[in-house]
Length: 69
Image: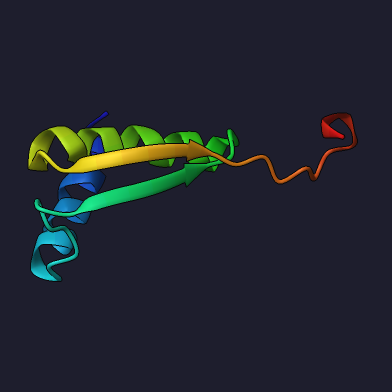
């Protein structure tokens, strides 16, 4: 648990130092439903609350699996 909080703090510090987040902008996040996308989604929700940024989320199906056709 402590490692995950440390990771979030480190990423937050990086974003602030590099000035990647702007409160007045709208961000679009595309997720595919995979493990990496869902992890990113949770992380972005944490940042959204802390920075009060506007985020819209779109679902993208890559159609890589036969069952998706």
